[in-house]
Image 1 (cartoon, rainbow, N blue to C red):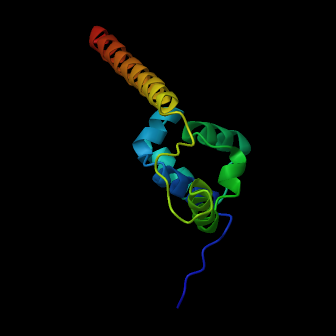
Image 2 (cartoon, helix red, strand yellow):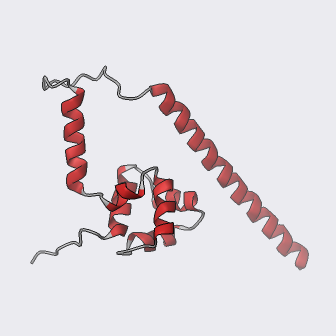
Image 3 (cartoon, rainbow, N blue to C red):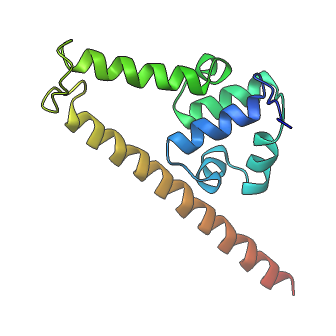
Length: 138
C-alpha cells in the first residue's frame, strides 16, 4: 500500500526548505519570535495564511513563490543544472569557479549571527525583567 502525499502541502514544503538550509525548528521559531511547537504546527498544516507565509519565507531567506513552487524534483534539477553550468559544459566540475563572492557570504553570515545573538540577548533580558517583576510582587 502506498501513501500518496499531497503536492501542495505547504507545511511539508516549509519543513523541507528548512531542513535543506540546515536549520532547526528552534532557530526558525526564534527568527519568527515564536516557539518550536508553533513551527511544528505550521509544518503539519496543509495551508497557512499569506501573511504568515511571507514571514516564514523571509525567515528562511527565500521567496513566497519558492515555497509555493518547491518540489524535490525542482531541487534535483537545480543542482543538476548548477553542476552542468559550473563545469562550462565539459562535464568536469571546476571548484575554482565561484558563483558568489566568499567575502560577501562571510559578512552576510556574520550579520545574521549578530542579529540572532541580539534577539537571544533581548529575550534573556526580557526574562530577567519579568522574573524581577515577579519577585517584587511577592
